[in-house]
Length: 417
Image 1 (cartoon, helix red, strand yellow):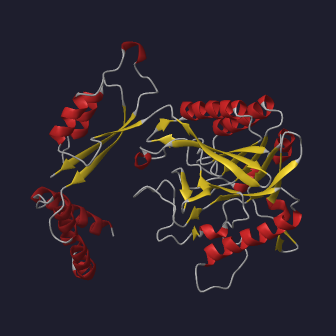
Image 2 (cartoon, one colour; image 1 turned 90 degrees about the vertical axis):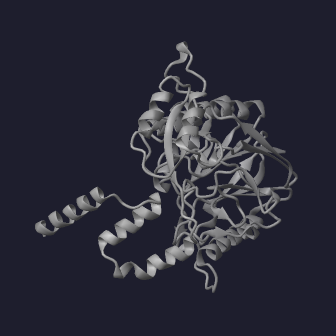
Image 3 (cartoon, one colour; image 1 turned 180 degrees about the horizontal axis):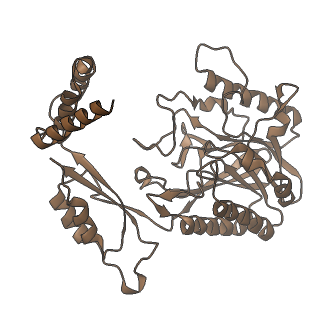
């Protein structure tokens, strides 16, 4: 028997609307370290996006390597398998590998080749139980970029088909190597067809139109468990219990406000997953939206903000106060609104992250209006375009003062040319 903990998308070093998240990440790593010890975990799988940027700060790297040292010291039999995500630098993540291997840590960031062919054996990691026996073979695949996967002649999506072909060949190689009762485990950092992402959420950096979506059929029934990263919402893929996204431990945007965070614990025995359990984690700092639903008028917003709880005297400046998003429905620009909001919040137990201004839309068909704009844009002068945009946004005519200032700016620009 072997027990695996699946996690992903840590995004160490991320700032949230200018706020540092070091304490939040430290809180999660402390919780994770306790989970590893209390549940006697044999293998920790990290399915990509360890860091938020490809060139992480020294502090972020220090937090990561100290965590590895801590958990491998506290759990002498623990093995770590880490793959690079699209936010990570594959080469940078692999750089300290000679040292990390002494701490039973494998990192796969680069798809290596031998004699021009993909080195599939390099992407297969042996997973051992507490007795030191190989209990499973792990297909440890990092985020794949063009050139990392086999070229497939297809009328469909060359990326999706290429990724599928790589996993197929890799699985075939693992099946050749596996011994009786050894399980096959797959790790990947990708977007699977049918996975659910937050509406209008760009934090996951998915490709519009799903051009990089990979079919869950890529992961066959011979694979006991597939540990995925890249999508921040914890979920099963296409209803299959053994293909999962662990999700991010912290919300990366307000679109992820209601996500349930955590890790997935998987128990393998005799070549198959006999138990799969979600272990929920509660982030140190929560997200708060006012109002919780759609944007409302400034008066309603200010009234709701005034009812927020006050800071406790002994906890002023507390870094654990919720991040606040304020959503306001406007009919015209309100230059003093931010100041009013900040004044009301000055003694409240929240931290203002952003103010979202939503303007009332005309009742005309937006698609029809967009089509008219597209066909007539070339026939309009800059002032006409500006006035039309102003009127569509604020539902009122552009003031003559703005029109005069714009014309002056155009004239001055013409003199310089």
